[in-house]
Image (cartoon, rainbow, N blue to C red; front, side, top):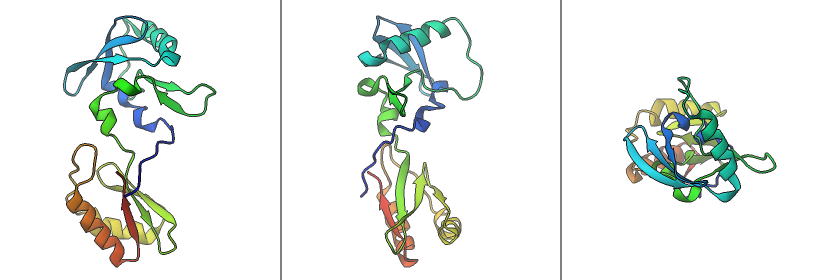
Length: 174
């Protein structure tokens, strides 16, 4: 299995702000937040390097109603130096955040060149027309329920067998 390695692009959290709201600031680094899908209230502890940024952002947004649509997680912060993004509450983040993986599987050709990435519940991102057609005609039709934080082993087995039969290799991300 391939190991998921975050490249700090921030895409995972760029629209998650619709689901996480800060309910109350307890002190300069501790907050109570609500996960809107389950209505669960949870505590978070902000990493010290982002405490001021999160506090300022929370203060600026207090008492205002957010515009509908996508908005970033309130704890998504640009890294010092501006190269990518960090989670300001990484150690105390929600289980849904802990279980998230950008990719479920990487797909390689005969030369062992990465030519596709399986995203979310089973969408393929590829510029290879043969792989795209194979995915659409055979793999996308498979049931693809995934347990939290991982891949369904039966799905992985079927997908890798189909890929192998067409000279591709699928490498599930753990």
